[in-house]
Image (cartoon, rainbow, N blue to C red; front, side, top):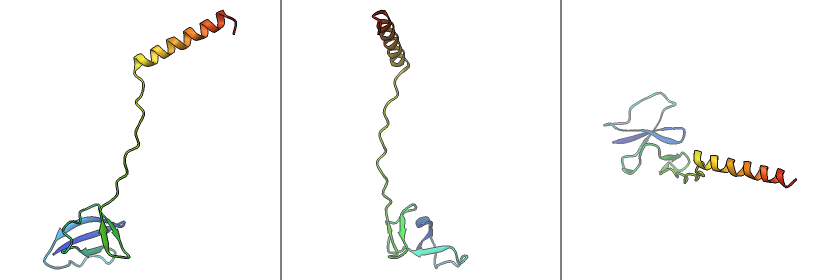
Length: 90
């Protein structure tokens, strides 16, 4: 037989045993012998008794940070713009 320990509504530990072991009453074991696709980390719905693969969200794209050379070039442009504005009296 195959069992899954459920912890925080997830399949926490999957193991095989000849019969369902007796653990402390707060340890939830579910027989998954007929569900060979269930894996650790899958979500468990206690109302239906079903396991589902977790939905992993797409990572949020991160804007690349400017390189040191790009920051230096921008600083130079800003400095030149400030000097130009000062020269023309703005």
